[in-house]
Amino acid sequence: MAIKLVIGLGNPGRKYEGTRHNVGFDVLDLLSARSGAQFVNHLKWKSHIAKHPQALLMKPQTFMNESGVAAGAALRFYKWKPEQVLVVFDDVSLPVGSLRFRKSGSAGGHNGLKSLIQHFGSDDFPRLKVGIGGPKPGEMVGHVLGKFAPEERAEMENALARAADAVQLALSDGLEAAANVHNVKNKS
Image (cartoon, one colour):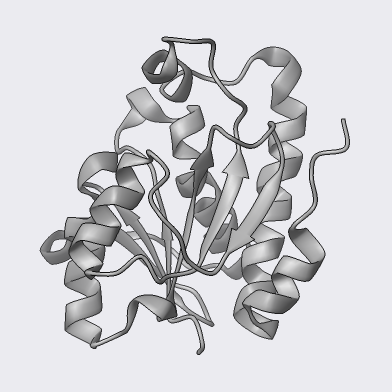
Protein backbone atom coordinates (compact mmCIF):
# COMPACT_ATOMS: atom_id res chain seq x y z
CA MET A 1 0.00 0.00 0.00
CA ALA A 2 1.46 3.37 -1.04
CA ILE A 3 2.38 5.89 1.63
CA LYS A 4 0.17 8.99 1.42
CA LEU A 5 1.25 10.83 4.57
CA VAL A 6 4.61 11.20 6.32
CA ILE A 7 4.40 12.45 9.89
CA GLY A 8 7.45 13.77 11.69
CA LEU A 9 7.07 13.81 15.45
CA GLY A 10 8.35 16.66 17.58
CA ASN A 11 7.37 19.58 19.76
CA PRO A 12 6.49 23.01 18.34
CA GLY A 13 8.38 26.18 19.12
CA ARG A 14 11.94 27.49 19.09
CA LYS A 15 12.56 26.14 22.59
CA TYR A 16 12.53 22.58 21.20
CA GLU A 17 14.45 23.13 17.96
CA GLY A 18 17.51 20.91 17.74
CA THR A 19 16.43 18.66 20.62
CA ARG A 20 16.57 14.88 20.46
CA HIS A 21 12.78 14.63 20.58
CA ASN A 22 12.47 16.75 17.41
CA VAL A 23 14.39 14.59 14.94
CA GLY A 24 11.10 13.73 13.20
CA PHE A 25 10.56 17.43 12.43
CA ASP A 26 14.20 17.73 11.31
CA VAL A 27 13.87 14.88 8.81
CA LEU A 28 10.71 16.40 7.31
CA ASP A 29 12.41 19.80 7.08
CA LEU A 30 15.15 18.15 4.98
CA LEU A 31 12.60 16.41 2.76
CA SER A 32 10.68 19.63 2.16
CA ALA A 33 13.86 21.60 1.43
CA ARG A 34 15.04 18.98 -1.07
CA SER A 35 11.72 18.98 -2.94
CA GLY A 36 11.04 22.73 -2.67
CA ALA A 37 7.81 22.05 -0.76
CA GLN A 38 6.98 24.78 1.75
CA PHE A 39 5.38 24.10 5.12
CA VAL A 40 2.24 26.11 5.82
CA ASN A 41 0.18 26.31 8.98
CA HIS A 42 -2.99 24.22 8.73
CA LEU A 43 -5.18 25.40 11.60
CA LYS A 44 -7.91 22.77 11.17
CA TRP A 45 -5.40 19.95 11.64
CA LYS A 46 -3.20 21.81 14.14
CA SER A 47 -0.19 21.06 11.92
CA HIS A 48 2.37 22.40 9.54
CA ILE A 49 1.75 20.75 6.16
CA ALA A 50 3.88 20.57 3.01
CA LYS A 51 2.91 19.00 -0.31
CA HIS A 52 5.88 16.82 -1.24
CA PRO A 53 5.61 15.43 -4.81
CA GLN A 54 4.93 11.91 -3.48
CA ALA A 55 3.13 12.42 -0.16
CA LEU A 56 1.77 14.95 2.26
CA LEU A 57 4.27 15.92 4.98
CA MET A 58 2.92 16.74 8.45
CA LYS A 59 4.52 18.22 11.55
CA PRO A 60 1.84 18.20 14.29
CA GLN A 61 1.85 21.40 16.36
CA THR A 62 0.03 19.85 19.32
CA PHE A 63 3.12 18.80 21.31
CA MET A 64 4.36 15.25 21.24
CA ASN A 65 1.82 13.61 23.54
CA GLU A 66 -1.11 14.88 21.43
CA SER A 67 0.31 14.11 17.95
CA GLY A 68 -2.60 11.81 17.19
CA VAL A 69 -5.11 14.68 17.37
CA ALA A 70 -3.58 16.30 14.28
CA ALA A 71 -2.76 13.08 12.44
CA GLY A 72 -6.13 11.50 13.13
CA ALA A 73 -7.92 14.53 11.65
CA ALA A 74 -5.94 14.21 8.41
CA LEU A 75 -6.61 10.46 8.15
CA ARG A 76 -10.34 10.96 8.64
CA PHE A 77 -10.46 13.79 6.11
CA TYR A 78 -8.68 11.84 3.36
CA LYS A 79 -10.13 8.46 4.41
CA TRP A 80 -6.62 6.99 4.53
CA LYS A 81 -5.76 3.84 6.44
CA PRO A 82 -3.03 3.83 9.11
CA GLU A 83 -0.95 1.59 6.81
CA GLN A 84 -0.70 4.56 4.41
CA VAL A 85 1.11 6.68 7.02
CA LEU A 86 4.85 6.65 7.69
CA VAL A 87 5.86 8.09 11.07
CA VAL A 88 9.40 9.39 11.69
CA PHE A 89 10.44 9.75 15.33
CA ASP A 90 13.23 9.56 17.89
CA ASP A 91 14.08 6.29 19.64
CA VAL A 92 16.13 6.07 22.85
CA SER A 93 16.64 2.31 22.47
CA LEU A 94 18.80 2.80 19.36
CA PRO A 95 22.35 4.18 19.37
CA VAL A 96 22.82 7.74 18.11
CA GLY A 97 22.54 7.76 14.33
CA SER A 98 20.98 4.33 13.83
CA LEU A 99 17.90 3.96 11.64
CA ARG A 100 15.25 1.25 11.87
CA PHE A 101 12.10 0.75 9.81
CA ARG A 102 9.20 -1.21 11.30
CA LYS A 103 5.89 -2.12 9.64
CA SER A 104 3.95 -1.87 12.91
CA GLY A 105 4.30 -2.33 16.63
CA SER A 106 3.61 -1.00 20.08
CA ALA A 107 4.33 2.51 21.32
CA GLY A 108 7.31 1.22 23.30
CA GLY A 109 6.89 4.01 25.86
CA HIS A 110 6.93 6.80 23.24
CA ASN A 111 4.13 9.26 24.02
CA GLY A 112 3.83 10.48 20.43
CA LEU A 113 3.25 6.92 19.22
CA LYS A 114 0.79 6.27 22.06
CA SER A 115 -1.27 9.23 20.87
CA LEU A 116 -1.14 8.10 17.23
CA ILE A 117 -2.21 4.56 18.14
CA GLN A 118 -5.08 5.93 20.21
CA HIS A 119 -6.36 8.24 17.45
CA PHE A 120 -5.76 5.77 14.59
CA GLY A 121 -7.40 2.93 16.51
CA SER A 122 -4.49 0.74 15.38
CA ASP A 123 -0.76 0.22 15.81
CA ASP A 124 -0.54 -1.12 12.26
CA PHE A 125 1.35 1.74 10.59
CA PRO A 126 4.94 1.90 9.32
CA ARG A 127 7.55 3.90 11.15
CA LEU A 128 11.14 5.01 10.87
CA LYS A 129 12.97 5.17 14.18
CA VAL A 130 15.96 7.49 14.41
CA GLY A 131 18.35 6.53 17.20
CA ILE A 132 19.10 9.27 19.72
CA GLY A 133 20.88 7.12 22.32
CA GLY A 134 19.64 6.23 25.76
CA PRO A 135 19.58 8.40 28.88
CA LYS A 136 21.18 7.77 32.23
CA PRO A 137 18.71 6.22 34.71
CA GLY A 138 16.10 8.73 35.83
CA GLU A 139 17.02 11.33 33.20
CA MET A 140 14.60 10.47 30.36
CA VAL A 141 12.82 13.85 30.12
CA GLY A 142 16.01 15.89 30.25
CA HIS A 143 17.60 13.56 27.70
CA VAL A 144 14.87 13.69 25.04
CA LEU A 145 14.24 17.40 25.52
CA GLY A 146 17.97 18.14 25.53
CA LYS A 147 20.21 18.98 22.62
CA PHE A 148 22.84 16.67 21.19
CA ALA A 149 26.31 16.81 22.71
CA PRO A 150 28.96 18.48 20.51
CA GLU A 151 30.58 15.10 19.78
CA GLU A 152 27.20 13.72 18.57
CA ARG A 153 26.26 16.57 16.22
CA ALA A 154 28.18 15.44 13.12
CA GLU A 155 26.79 11.90 13.46
CA MET A 156 23.26 13.26 13.84
CA GLU A 157 23.58 15.54 10.80
CA ASN A 158 24.60 12.46 8.83
CA ALA A 159 21.78 10.39 10.36
CA LEU A 160 19.15 13.03 9.52
CA ALA A 161 20.33 13.12 5.89
CA ARG A 162 20.24 9.30 5.73
CA ALA A 163 16.77 9.31 7.31
CA ALA A 164 15.52 11.76 4.66
CA ASP A 165 17.05 9.47 2.00
CA ALA A 166 15.31 6.52 3.65
CA VAL A 167 11.91 8.21 3.60
CA GLN A 168 12.41 9.22 -0.02
CA LEU A 169 13.27 5.61 -0.94
CA ALA A 170 10.21 4.34 0.96
CA LEU A 171 8.03 6.77 -1.01
CA SER A 172 9.50 5.83 -4.39
CA ASP A 173 10.30 2.11 -4.01
CA GLY A 174 8.31 0.97 -0.99
CA LEU A 175 8.96 0.33 2.67
CA GLU A 176 10.61 -3.06 2.21
CA ALA A 177 13.18 -1.70 -0.24
CA ALA A 178 13.96 1.19 2.10
CA ALA A 179 14.28 -1.14 5.10
CA ASN A 180 16.68 -3.41 3.18
CA VAL A 181 18.99 -0.46 2.55
CA HIS A 182 18.64 1.56 5.74
CA ASN A 183 18.06 -0.90 8.61
CA VAL A 184 21.72 -0.84 9.57
CA LYS A 185 23.25 0.15 12.89
CA ASN A 186 25.55 3.08 13.35
CA LYS A 187 29.09 1.91 12.66
CA SER A 188 30.83 4.19 15.19
